[in-house]
Length: 384
Image 1 (cartoon, rainbow, N blue to C red):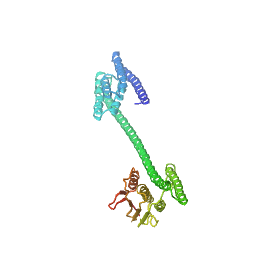
Image 2: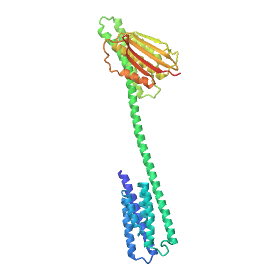
Image 3: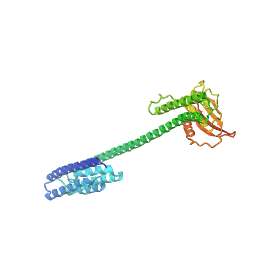
Image 4: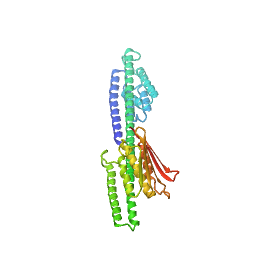
């Protein structure tokens, strides 16, 4: 419990004790004045019992059943603990089990008959009509007090439930935010790997040619240098586009389309990688519409495979086969000559492609074939 809540409870308990003392003093004096035959020491005993019962309310939350039982005993002869008994009964109704509440409620009805037997008034002795009337009033008040306590109990349980739900919702929102951030980082990492890996592999090929091909003519050197400059410029542009994911609203970024596969093939051909495209689906030529996400996934597949072919099997011919019809699926198969040495890459590109395929409801397969080639296949849904 925090300090503010503790001070609030202390103020409430102090106010209830003061109110119970005032009401107890008034009721004790009124009953004693209505019974002139009672000696004064009976009034003094009533007031002492009332003081003890009211001060005991300070510990009512910690020991609700004990305080309620003690007040019930005092109420058998003391009128000054009437309000203290009702406060203790409310506390029991708020904090205890239904069985305990029922027992304490019944126990609060019995002391009144004992009180009338010990201290009968001129017209209120038990079981006269006025005494029966007071008893009926006592029953009604006790039941109202119990109902009030049960309502307070229900309200507290509702508030606690709402707080638990709010805390759970806050934790869930935090987990969703962390998951969204993780997915965004993964998406950005895939984009940077695919885009920059493709461009930098082209730069590596032409820069390597300039380094090791000493007998190149000035025209060849100029042409290779121009390719290096152009791809360096494009790499910077692609990097700006990827970083733009962190800044631009969704839908305003120049994302690649399936029709841009032809540009990838031209770039690979200029870099010295023979590429053959066999498109039986009409997806890359624009003859049939392909969803943007599916087309972008196909583009990234071709881009990553061409990059890997340049890195691990330089100069090997690459064959791209695209089949499928709208309403069924779009299948892409890319094969190239298997590299002589074991690839030394980390495999992040293929893992990223597999994640892309799963995100659109597709699948990815890769591995060597029986004919000495390396194959990467992707199957994507193609809705109408």
